[in-house]
Length: 525
Image (cartoon, rainbow, N blue to C red; front, side, top):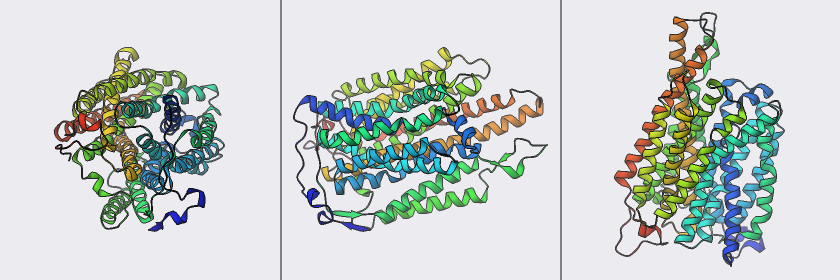
């Protein structure tokens, strides 16, 4: 660990004084706009390249088995380094780390936009993930320290949650539009568009956001290495199981076979990942200033929020990934039309989050999040019933995109409030960092797992179809559709598992969420 104290900071930043919060409702509003603008930029980058993936692969000659790393590489760097970003904000001041994060994100986006090869693009995605890991947890913590507890903070979290939820859908729409401008180079704009946004956010931060305390403490670098390395190895192992082994491609089997769960490299990577993550937990329980204080899980309500917010985004990531491919590859939508197919998600998410914010003053988080996860699971289940060859957007897809978005809106707001409720001010960055880590890591692990499920059923279906009619040109599309619908079905049961956890274990009351502390006589956890 590297010891950090106030004496290590420049002279003009050693003060522990917290700058005055925004002095007027208008100033509060502009501060929230800035924070949410940065969050939207960070979140939409999880999906903005999804629709452009085929064109990226063609332009940079990236093998299909490695193309998914354009998405998962960003999510892993983002999720794996979030806790480090939260702790850096606690130690050096959240406004400062927020500014560094959005500026680094802008630079990385520029590098991605001018990438000339696979290594340069994937490297820029990792750097984007680092910038996002610095900006996102500090943005959430800045809401906690800027807005007073009660209706004002509830509204701020509602808007922030909406940005987190609709950002993925906006990314698909924006990615489709930019790619459609010119498929040969339009994909580059999906990265370059972040450059002015990030630089403007960095410029306005010291003018709109209050500064925070700089606390003495320690920076747990070994913990960051173990946690991030463990996640990377685990996701690599899971992803490799669904990749095609080039040695199995032949005239008899032109599609080849996947490495599968028995592949030695995949098994080794997963074992190394699990061991590293166990070592991470053991190390965090023994050091004085851990990257992830395990005491943050002492509250049962907070632990439930973290677990549910790990499982729920996993299902949402899968919906965006597989449904965007299904709409383009199977239904023949153009990139722009495919992007706009997700527009109902934005409206449903805004409505659901707004409704949830208002209901938080009358209903306990369990009822809101429990209902939301049930709705989201139902939507995924209905996606799993789409029949190849008879798909209709308005009856088979659009209604359940709306249901999914309503469920997400009802879930994200109460779970976000529960996750940071009762966390000490000096640990707010870690509290928000753990929440964001669960979302990103859950999304990466969920997408890797459901991709393996889809690949298994796609390969199995393709073999059956080839045996029946090997010359049918639609075999590949039908096999993909079968794999995608099985992934939706597994995703539905995943999110229903999260719903069960919420209904059974979430015990915090809505009266407690309205305060910074726990009301007298009320027990949490």
